[in-house]
Length: 466
Image: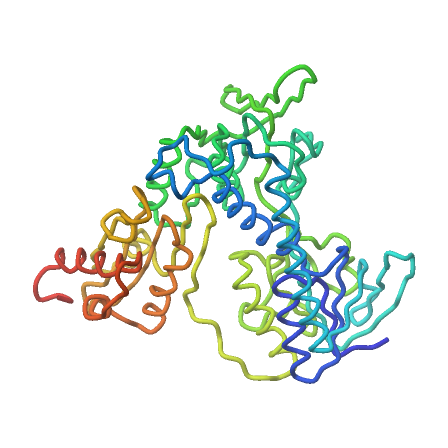
């Protein structure tokens, strides 16, 4: 069999690249070793974790506690099965939508593990035991990543778990230790904290989420400590003991010990490239098994082999992965495509949400741009009062020269939706005037844009952007 394009992996980058190529009239094959299409995003990553988060917020009554108190719950006794039932319904729907999308675009799919035989041929080992040799003019590698599993961590799938295994838990822990305060670790730590599970968050670096504006991180840290989450920064895990007659013992480099019923190890991910046998096609992966590509075309060192999505590293977002897959397919077949804007929104689905776009305050200072900030607290808006919000904030950063919006940073309810207003203004080179002169629906959280803009305007010296 021969195809114009073989896509290995059916996550966001793979499916978008495959469909784009199919719309250009190309014969496309998608190979995925999972039981069903969708990749990490659908089965163990983006969709499951966000579904779990939404289920927790609904069943725990989290959003109503501003009115009814911290002890309020919609369902008094919440079990692991309560959380996973909704998860399975959502995943089935996502897979059905994706299968239909492939079918209507005439994309061929094949379940099996692919490995390169040479730069233009792969062998696919199917679940039925067949070994098929298939060739293609071009390839798109969109295999994603898998959890980093150091040898000294005793993963057992029940008491010590990675971020894939946590979705198959059969019970909720009484105490949880989360190792790794990156995006995944913070999301799960805050989700379990919303269930009133005591959580200890452990991070070897001195701070967490260093790419996020630090004023937002400080706000998040305050909220976590306020609800009883223990933070252990600057603490590397040296060992985890799992005695049969007691809790797990997490030993830290500084001599401290953390006890927990369950440990989630979420310290990094590695590219899922080990089984591809890349040496056969002349490509090398880095120390974390990720692939290096031309950031404009997404070509690897082999010009006919492209890579996109998490396997090429930062930003490792489903949204950016989709665009990478589309751009790779366009370039592969000589079709002009608009380059993605410089700035894209970053969403962290913690409790509360964090979303950001543009420059952080630290980056603005590093670039030597004269600026001013405006802050809005969600509790200052009528909508925030109606929703019972006592936390959450928006921070806008404006250049003094011309008052152009440089950065938009939000922590709180609905942050990942609200950020798109800031995204449009930044990418269209909009200014403070947009927020002051325009009318927003009332009452909405989006009014925070006007509050923050007016706050910045009041601070600006006369004769600057005012």
